Amino acid sequence: MTTVNTIQSHLRSLADPATAQMSQRFFKTAPGQYGAGDVFLGIKVPTLRAQVSSFRGTPLKAIAALLKSKYHEERLFALLLLIDSYQRGDAENKLACYDLYLAHTAHINNWDLVDVSAPHIVGNFLAQRPRQVLYELVASPSLWERRIAIIATFHFIRRNEFGDTLRLAEHLLPDKHDLMHKAVGWMLREVGKRDLATEEKFLLQHYPAMPRTMLRYAIERFPETRRQAYLNGSA
Image: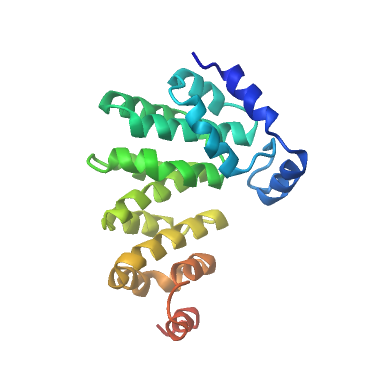
């Protein structure tokens, strides 16, 4: 049976100090920044993904323990293993993975950890179920729980279901954090890729109140004249 120590020993053999140093800067780990205190081993994401098959079948208890690691890449690898387990498991296992995920949001504490996992576990699980939990998460004081809520809807967007994305986006208009502005704008842009009229209806109602970064992300793919109309307030 795969143990946490086995996984950690393997991952740490892949560590690269130079990559770790770059990651510390990229993920804003200085005091007062959003990733303050996060620690990196220095393992690139493709390398991590390539290890998943070697540790397939890791018990959920071990994945949960790994998710509590102080090392960013070990938490990311735990999420990659959890996604793999969720996708390959039966209904009981999917529920267990989903419950584990929501019980450990305190450790899913950077934007890449959220973005790689929320649609595949939270979004997928809720696709055919009530989605009230997303509205609880979006009201959380935790930046990462709020991001989980909106990014989880990427799964719905891919199914051409936009209602929850738009309702959550409306709730997040007053959010103060730049990472939330980017996340909401990104999801609105994804809606627009599939149904531009739906995105524009939302924008025309809300763009004057949207944070600038959120608006810029949402209209990134618009024709230049239309993009400028929104930016200049004349849409």
